[in-house]
Image 1 (cartoon, rainbow, N blue to C red):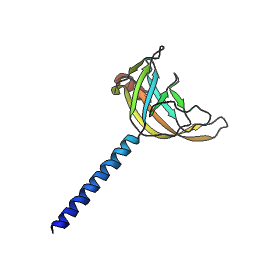
Image 2: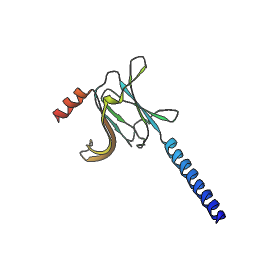
Image 3: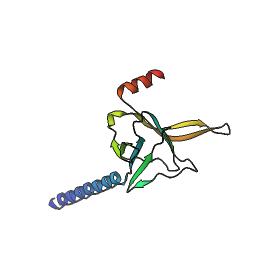
Image 4: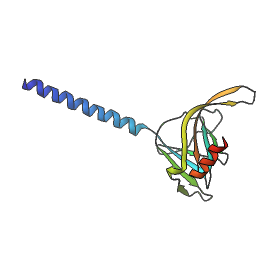
Length: 144
């Protein structure tokens, strides 16, 4: 009976250690995303993935850098990935100022249909979010 108990403990601890290692690997394998927005930007941001002819997202180590233009729309040939999101304003001198998470609203990964130049509709994978104060967000929602 004692051998069976020891075997049970060994198997239990082996499974526990394996689950920890696998879970930890999955978390650390995710890529982080840095979003650099024009200084003072408010409004919708849209990242359009798998767009041929667009430059790939640059990286800082394991982090993808999403340099958002003044239009709020960024095209990239990269596929969407999950991971931590960090938001910054970028001033003219290249300095970053952290955007607090209470300024980021309605973030979602979704499919969107857009009209192409030849008149057909194309389905895109997009990441969208709104940047603004609660009042700006309420104003935006009341317009729609």
